[in-house]
Length: 268
Ligand code: MF3
Ligand code: CO
Image (cartoon, rainbow, N blue to C red):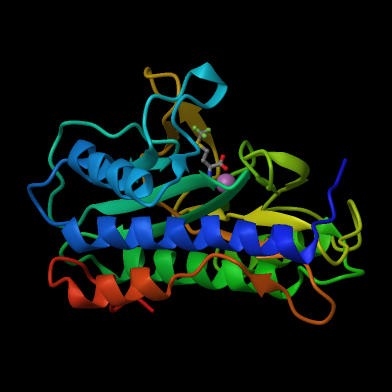
């Protein structure tokens, strides 16, 4: 069942989603060579708790052990924070959810530690742009497939990247994952109709090489089959007439990214 949220509910989801952006910005402030992703996760969890919210991912399905997913290089998504240190050139995706006032927000952003080659920078830029191409289609009267097609067309058909099939975007609200599923691949005009007040998390996961992925031994981390890097950006978005309302924000994240000399923000 696809929910239609009231203006009050939309504002509560916006609050949770904006807190997620601020939590990822905290991560952006501390990312540098030599830090562990476990340290980053600990800061994210502390920040969310300090602000009166609960990390949505922790204990998800009585199973996910951390507040965030931090996926490095060939890890696509659902990366376990670990005690190994980040190094120059690493591609680090930070995915966070927060639950407050009965509603979840969900957002993700990919960073470059130090600097990276043009091939990596293009992967991140195109993936981020594809998120906005999908959001452009998240308007009343369109269908889920219009969002899906826009993302796949831009990343896969126009740039030759691999779009992950196994994981998809999703409705979000009282639960982290609600209907509808929002794949990053599909056909225009297919799928459920989007209506004003439906809230979805749009989250392209794009591989530099092949689209195929596999599960790591930890049972959660998803890795690219060919070992090449992957990028992931996510916004929580409310479907409206004419133009979608982006409830999460990259503003604080991008400001922190630009201010941190240990991150490369020259890719977009
Ligand atoms: N943003 C991801 C998703 O929507 C992260 C979920 S991690 C989980 O699937 F642990 F909560 F599953
Ligand atoms: Co999500």
